[in-house]
Structure formats: structure tokens, C-alpha cells
Length: 106
Length: 122
Image (cartoon, rainbow over all chains, first blue to last red; front, side):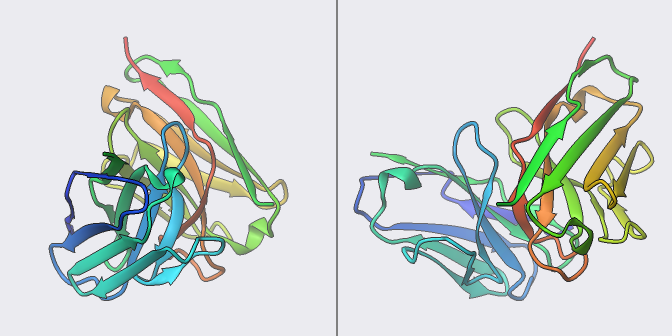
């Protein structure tokens, strides 16, 4: 099973700052990676698929990059509604999720 | 607007059974694979089961294989998860999830329902 490791576990930032979240796969997953955002009491929402393709309706401040085993989700100029937990997930070989990164207000 | 509404979550004793249902609307249901993904309280996400658009192909996580069964009714836009031999570690919010694209089971979870809570405890 491919293991997905997210870092850091928690990222404390101020509104307007840039957030950089990392996701590492235990073996190559190509570009078969998605990012989700989850707010308390809500289901996850798809942000990015194919490692870098924004899903419909997702603001341009969210961007994904990387391939193989190293991936990054960047959120430019954090808005108040962006403070949430972010999960990565690979779908190259079966499906596995990362443990999540919580972006909270500094 | 795409909508997925789950129902059937409840408190059940270990070894018991439960059936979850998901009613879909706002998209051509029979074109999309559907999934169940769960989240234990305060924990991460875990894939549970998937079913192809025509219902002919199903997939299960090892943790539920042989205990859970996924079925769909395309005439009524419903997908269900029959759960048997439930264990405390099955306690979680269960989400009904629509595949992102019309292209088989790709495990790209495009739209999620609000979830239904299953608690397995004596």
C-alpha cells in the first residue's frame, strides 16, 4: 500500500500570508494526486486533481504542483475561509489518504 | 445542483448490522461511479467501497471486505451500503461520494454528501 505523509501537521499563519503544504508518497504516483479541504462539521471538498488541475469553482489562489513522490499545495494570500484541514490522496495504485495538515490562524 | 443525502446511521452493538442509503440528485446518476468514504471521530479519511456506474463492478477496502456490500439502484438514483458483523473500529461518519468524471472508478472524489454517523458500541 502506498503511504501518504503530509507535513507539517499544523501550519499557523496570518490572513494574507502564503501557505505551503507538502505531501509525500512512499512510491511514485505520477500525477495521480488530489487535494481536499475540510472545515469543521463539513464534508471534504475537492480542490485539486491530477496534482495541479483546479476543480470547478476553486479560487485561483489555490495551486497544486509536483509529480512522482513530492507534491505541494500552495494557498496564496490566505483568506479567513481558508483556515481548515487539508488532505492529499493518491489514486495511482488503489487509494490512500494523507493524515492531513491543519492551517490555523496565528 | 448536485446533492447527495445519506441516511441510516445509528448506534448499533458489535456484531450487528446496518444499512446506509444515499439519495442522489442534480446529475445523471447512472453515468457516475459512486463511493463510500468514512472518517472516524477526529481522524483522517478512509476509502470503504466503490461501485461502477452500471453496478457491475465493486471494490472494497480490506478492512470491510466480506462484511460490507455496496449496491445501487439507477432507476431510483440510490446507492446503499449494507454493513454486517460491525466492529467498534467501524465507528465513523460515512460519506456518500460521487466520482469526479464520467470515466469509471477512478477514485477522484468529486462531490461529498454531509455524511451519516455510525456508532458501534455495547
